[in-house]
Amino acid sequence: MHYQKIIIGKTFIEFHNNWLGEETVVVNGQVVSKKASVWGAQHYFTVIEDGHTIRYILTSKADPSHQVYLDLRRNGELIQRNIAVPTRGGGTTRKRRPKNNPSKHEGLAKLKEYELEEAVTALIKAVEIDPQDSEVYFHLACAYSVLEQTQEGYEALKKAKELGLKDDDTILKHDMLAYLRIQDAFEDFLNSGFTKYDPALLDNGVDGV
Image 1: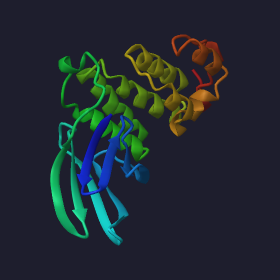
Image 2 (image 1 turned 90 degrees about the horizontal axis):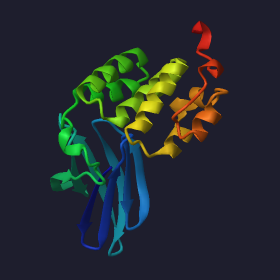
Image 3 (image 1 turned 90 degrees about the vertical axis):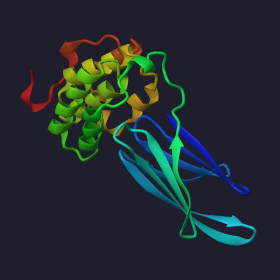
């Protein structure tokens, strides 16, 4: 999770970017923009300040190491530039893991474009770079699910949980995981904490196993 707060007079702007690449901008306690992003996005919103309507553009961007930065424009004028967005809630193994995993970034970009085979190839390379990254396994599960490769998808989810993925709600709601959730094996998989499933109850699409 990336988080940054910007204060302009009486205006409080909060930027949130979660591990799925979903960006949310909150102004004075109200959500004003939501977008999905890999390398950045532009968020447009207006704020009433001293009786005047002020137009803001908050631009997010990321460098090759995936450090997130923000630019803020007010009525067309750039007023803050390259605001670094720190990471919240890092795990204890963070210092031992690679800071830059270009294959992960490539895999996420391919996945968002539904270039699934390319996404799988890139994400497998990402695992080789950082085998402790639970997010990579989650995204692999998404790709396998859309490809209807159910056992590979279940194994990827199982590994993501083993590595500490805590966001069960995303597993239950993410659109790309729908095919895995409709399997007869899913209920027992869920009840086991995503640690065990019966392969005999999996349907691997038209090709089978």
